[in-house]
Length: 53
Image (cartoon, rainbow, N blue to C red; front, top):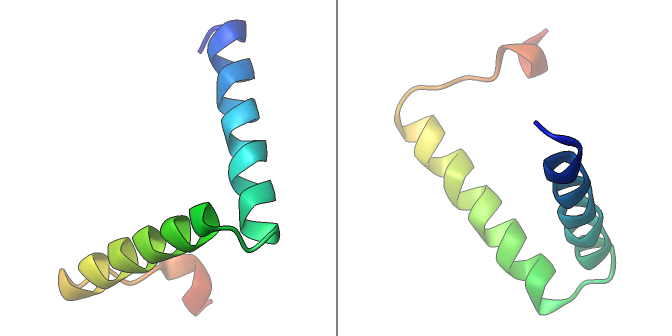
């Protein structure tokens, strides 16, 4: 990634984390999407190896 892409990604990541901490509607949307992805992965038989150690 270029420096500009890294900077944009870091800014987005900071905003996402701040929204989660503040219990905003955006945080609820991110949490819902995260749970949805986890359910889809589990349905496909995916098991996170790192958490099972």
